Image (tube, rainbow, N blue to C red):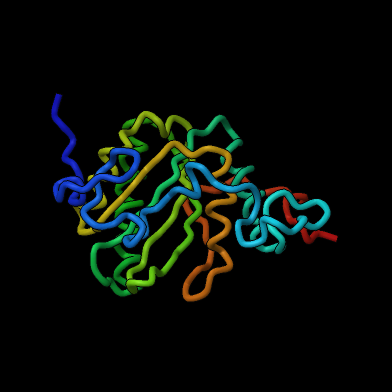
Length: 211
């Protein structure tokens, strides 16, 4: 069995509180996923305020609706889901960063088809700019038998194509509101979805602002 090459951060010898390696302070490089692994209930910005009637996650309807749609997508069709964070060591333009993301996703789709023998990999992507002026992406990937692929190998693949740091975890239900919270952030914080959605349409009832 061949050992999967560790990421650049691991090679630099630093570890986080989970014993996983980072070459820089993981909070500074945007790899702090504490909110996903052990998040507060609801929207941390409004955790002391009661949520509007019918809301489960957020005060505002935009993030509430995204959280519901992502949660629903993770459940349908017996899919496995990954929670992914991809970022860079140094500044990369937004156009270049999206090129890296699309290249990584394209290779992953090919591997998914080859390994799992299945089509239909789909994802949600939230884009965020760090204070150090470096972009990073949060994703939730879902697909039948996605768990057949090695998460460690795809962390390494991000580095191999020129990306900086990657972390992939099995996505829990709480990953949905964690990802959705980025949809209202400024400077490129939009939410978008991609992959195969043919025949999959979120029900209108997931839109919390429906009248």
